[in-house]
Image (tube, rainbow, N blue to C red; front, side):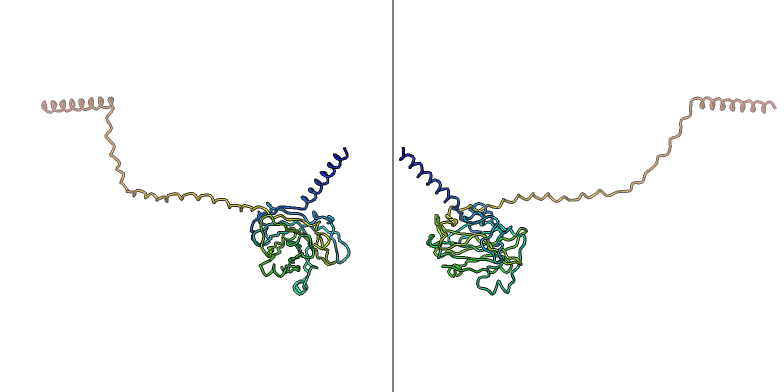
Length: 297
């Protein structure tokens, strides 16, 4: 009985450990996006996580503030893709109070983190040695790209870059991080996301960094299967043009004189003819009578 209970406890612990790991592990799709600060559709088909979904991160709070108050209304989400050379990261930052720290500071200081900036932290060699971290950063207003870490210089030499673009709800930051030695299917990388919120009061750092003591708390990316590119819809066929209509030539108008026929003589009415004949007979009789009278004379 004791053996059975012990076995059940061991299995339960194993399940809990598996759930704990799966909560911070994600398969990311293989796809090469355009680095322009606009989110390719493939990012939505890959693994992502919110900045407050990281372990030991308190929702609505930063982990360090230069002015003491760590409360924040900012939020962010990171999306990941990969190909044979690059790890791609797209970060959507939600922040309605963006403030420019000034180019005099951002462009002249080696690590101008006190600004509106996104910081990506990653481990891709020994995943248990936090000292091998690499940090890459992009600032919104000047688009200054900088970083530090075990492989940062090599990453820059291989073509790493980033861009930030303001949006209606904050800003986007997109990275192409060249990984020395390249990437392959099934490979694992550990990452964290940090966003620095600058204001007139100072800077509030939100999210998580990598250090020597927290490698077991980090997000684990597993490089997964290729994401098929979305084909643009085929254009609708253009309707065939209708045959050109040839205007009809109107027939010439010929003026034909209108001839009005003369009216036919009206036939006398029967009554009138009878009277006429009677008159003629009477005249004839009168003439004969006059002639006889002259002869007698």
